[in-house]
Length: 226
Image 1 (cartoon, one colour):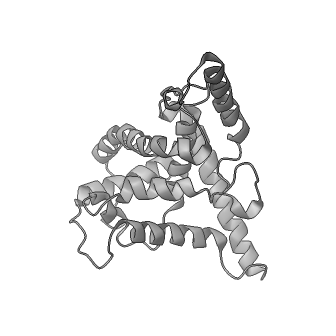
Image 2: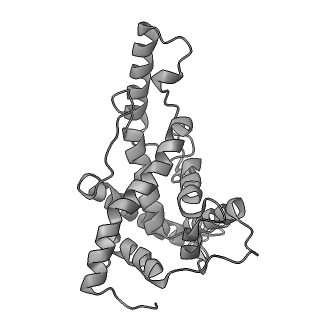
Image 3: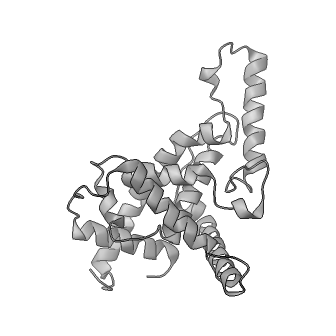
């Protein structure tokens, strides 16, 4: 729909869809978080005696506290600057929510793209944080991925990604890097998730222009650009 800006009615509809979008994204992240970060559900213990239950709950609680500021790195326990935003869970959430299988119509949202947008990546990163914080008491407990609770974190994450993009641009300009590390990640994420999800030679589902417009505008609303 080109550069057409959303009308007041479009905005009402878009905002009504945002909670469903956030919830669906977190559901995908929730399934992946325990394995990605090492959380243990009590009902998976082979011999759940009181002492083991107590120790497991404390381990989960301490784990959340320890990696809340480092979960974005490839290895949250051994962080290095070049691995920022590279934890494998972000790729898997992206694939799982937007692509999934050939039957997932969301693939059309990215059919003319060459890379994942930073606003999309920011949503993924914060959804993972929310899903991780569901373990903050040791037990898993639902944590609502709401605008009021996470918008400030989302904006800070998006701004961090934008600063990283600017840093990567400066690195290339100053001949300290052969390519833009941020764009490399954006392009790789879309390329890998396409390869993992469907044959790019196959015919994609027909998109609903209204839904496509709504998703694009939704990201603009969330990032404060609309």
